[in-house]
Amino acid sequence: MTSADPSGIDKMLTDTLRALSAYQSGQEKDAEASPPEGCGEAAEGLIRVRTAPPGRVTALEVDPRLLRLDLATLTGHIMAAVNDAMADLQGATAPTAGPIDLGDLGRQLTEIQQGAARQFSTFLTGLADAQDRLSRRDG
Image (cartoon, rainbow, N blue to C red; front, side):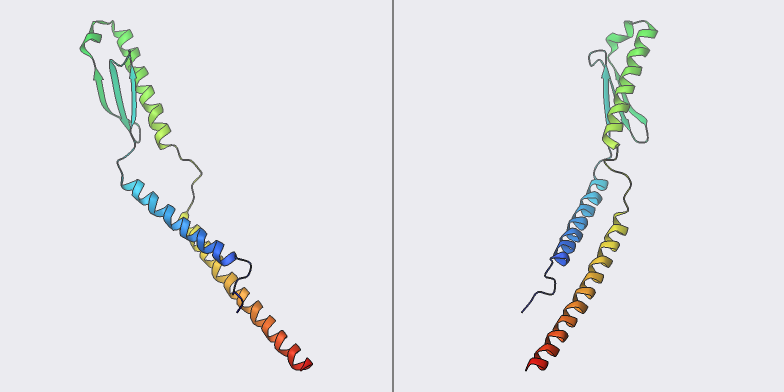
């Protein structure tokens, strides 16, 4: 008996849909994980900053030894630590690709798969009918 899809397109689409579903499940799990955080430091680690989306400072630690510095130097170190933490946060939250509607992509792939299956079925039925007619004519 011949396969309903000799080209393997149906299997390829099925595998793609399965991979898409697994990817979406992974994304949902990632969304449930702890939110991204940026960390930065300055003055040889004596100032530490943590940030969270959408760009909020969530923690600022300044070693008391730095309080002896003049105000301009101290604020410069704090700004450097905050900027370092913000850059780290941006790196943690930067998208790896443009926005993709995975649900819509999945629907489109399902439609392609179903349409291809219908077309293959029609094609194979036509071939079987033609073979029957030829065998009756020769027989």
